Image 1 (cartoon, one colour):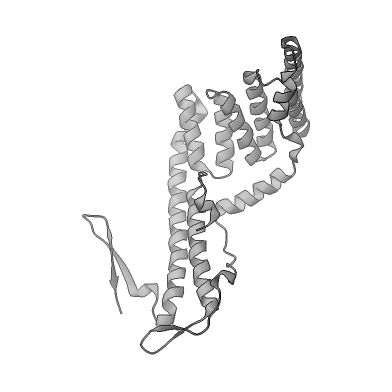
Image 2 (image 1 turned 90 degrees about the horizontal axis):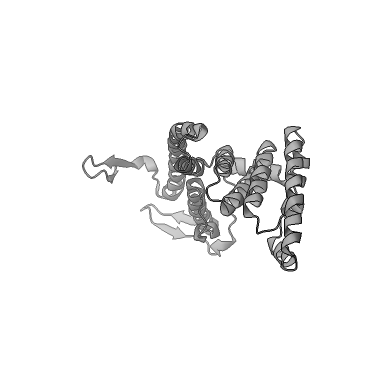
Length: 279
């Protein structure tokens, strides 16, 4: 099993299916490297020995979401780690600050936020990100609401630059600081949809409506997204069955058989499937 499937991190249906089919195909190709011969009675016998772990996995055609991930990773690479926030370092710095000094830093960060907003309005998104980032490095951690706004504003800027993964990260940070922050949920929903993480986008829109039932964009999204999710799932199912059929044919080929020799019949009562062999 792949390391991704062993992880406790939430992964998409597409990633699960891709990992499972890769594992199956890897096993089959490993066995193929060892070598299989078939006699007239369709009994498979090993024609060579070796370590299957040495077999190299095939270069599968990626699912659509994987292509998108690559695309957005490239976009995100344009923005280096110079905009990262070391909150542990901030915490250490603030230990030695008086309340007046913290208030002064908060005031400076507030002015920088306004400057960042102005740069955003002027379409200078790179400058906007730099200003919001510097403000986050100045604003004391105790001012969580102001920090949430800075993260949310930086997320909006990342959306403009199509840095969707970083937009998701910034929105998530804003939500962590304020779990009722509607704008942060909506911006994350936009970034999720842009990367075809439709289920996550729908969940964020539902959360928005729990907080603000009048939110028009979220109302529209919960009507628009479910058919898109169903369409994607059907497409994914077709792709998955196609892959499994190819793998099945690889297994059955040495025996002179193919998946066409097996027919799936659904029981109308139990909704289960029976496999019937046909010559």
